[in-house]
Length: 255
Image (cartoon, rainbow, N blue to C red; front, side, top):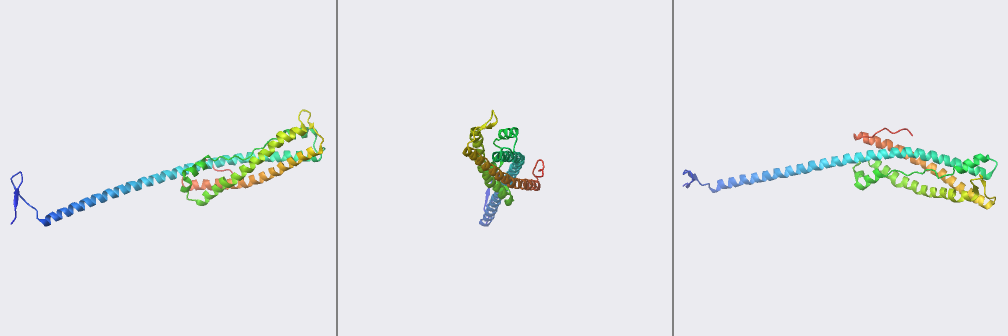
């Protein structure tokens, strides 16, 4: 026998039996689970989209930083040429002084004066490192998928340049010592002649000049190796940026 109750309209309302209530509860549960799943999927998609957007933004920033590094490499390339020319001129100066010390009649007096006056500390390499330091500190190197390129950049900045800078500082100090200490002790800049005929003092000066001359030759050879590595990296960084649709600026000049 069905039981009826009345609602506010006065119409009889049938009470639901146990099976009907169970069906309704199952429907509600399915609805809740479905809505929860929809919310979960929506949140997951939102997080994934945000992560993808952040990854793309990070990759874009890495490409911008690499473009800045390329600009610094090009500037270093131009500066290396100036250093090389200055070092070649210094080698010529030291060789003239050595020739004159070994044979005083090998150069006219005016040439000796000019040569001694030209004995100044030549330029040495001092590279730009701002972009490289930024990429290392920010972890942007991990976003460069050409690991060979990253390794070669690391070799340039952390080995070749450190060695060149370290030896360049010692080289600079030796040249400055000769220019500030040894030359004024044996050379009269006003009368343009030797201040002493003491063989030991002249021999000591000769040895110092020969030493920095050999060091200058070593430095030029090191510059040649640095120049080769630098030029190759510039070309490869340009290609990498072009392949990833990033700006490269002006193409590298031939070495």
